[in-house]
Amino acid sequence: MTGFFRLYLSVLYLLFSLEVSLAQSADSKYTAISKGDKIPNLLFHKMLNYSSETATSADFKGKLLIIDFWNSHCAACISSWPHLIEIQKKFQGKIQILLDNPDENESMVKNALEKGKKNLGIKIDLPTEYGDTLINKLFPYSGVPHIVWIDKDGVYKYATYDNSVNEKNIQAIIDGKNPEILEKIDNDSLISVDWDRPIFSPTNAGTPKKLLWQSTFAKGSERIWPGVYLRSIPKLNYFAIGGSASIKDLYRVAYSNRYSIDPTADTLLQLEPLMGNRVFLDVTDSTNYVDVIDHEYNYYKHYVYQLIPPGARSINELQQSMIQDLNRYVGLKANWEKRKVKCLILTCSDTSNISYRDGAFFRSISIDQFKANKASIRYLIYTLEQTIPGLLPYPLIDETHYKGLVGNIYIEANINDYKIFDKALQRYKLSLKLGDRLIDVLVISEPTGYRFPY
Image (cartoon, rainbow, N blue to C red; front, side, top):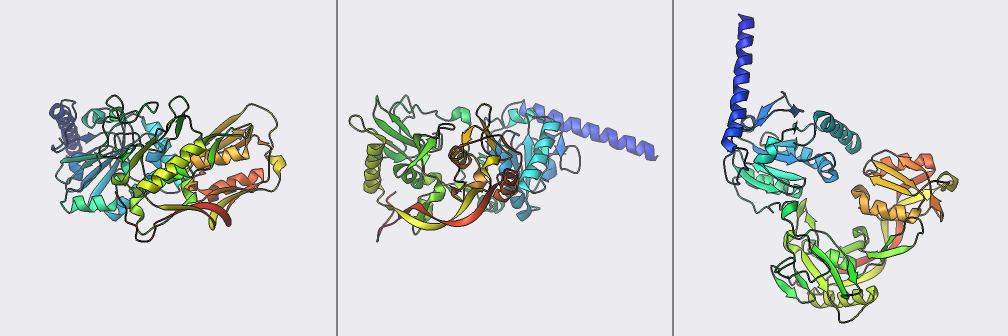
């Protein structure tokens, strides 16, 4: 009787799985589910960190289901896991966050989870599905992270960026509200702007949402690739910054004295924006001036600036014109000051351990490795500033007093954590420690009686 009962349960489970799978394919007809529609009972058929090898969306009925699509090549995806785990714990029983990697096999996914555990220093215990190509057809996207929100009644609500997964938005949805969340625009729908022509034209980025000044200074568009770019084209004589940059980012460009570095010649190349950790906002409300607030894009306060001057101009002249525009149309004060600031200080007790001996130039820097040969210290610090988010709160200061080229450094560790990075550097007689230093910083402040104009 026991054997028959077990056989009965096995057959029943197979029939249920087949029913769910058929419903998943038949109901959807392998086409995208539209926002606002109730989803079919989806089968997640290859599960890790879950009580069984399969799951269905019905298992999470009554909870807000947040599906985070990712892959092992996406550093932003992996670095978001600690935040997602915190959110899951805070709203335990009310939400379920599910990591979904449709494109990679079990070995690749397990390896990524293990590396994430090692590098982030936490257990990655969120339920994870892998290798399900059907789910791509139900929720199509290009580019990860890609977040799908399904409410407690099984209704597909949003497809968003990872920054939208925050306490404010989750609590609002749990409370039955419909918060304004920035819908994700996939990579193939974003506009790749041609910076060699005026930004806002019918054959480029189209018409700005709100033209503020013709230099150009305009409200940003979420359809333009985000970031801060500098471009000086001698033939066309213009200076471009975009797209969807914060006010703080514009000042980082206008007052920048920072240049990219040739790796071996140790010479300065093109102008780059100031590092954000060398810019201080002495203002009453910083939300008018920054990119992200509480893990969410501050897209209402993003702008595009483009300067097309008459005749050829040097970078310095273009910056001076940009400063005049910012004074005229934003009206903040910006001054260089000496301030004592917490910095990450790189020192070396024996430079013979790092001196270049032979071989070609190479450099590989990511959150879990640091490799370099035939490169200057100044170039390596510049690259670390550009690459590793965990180091960004602190300016990087070179106190090695070493002017030669570095050779044969090979480190595999979580360099996103400066304490772990420092420990790994010790084998080369290098040290990266936190300390106070008096450095030049750009201080942005509001004049007396100032009101933000936009």
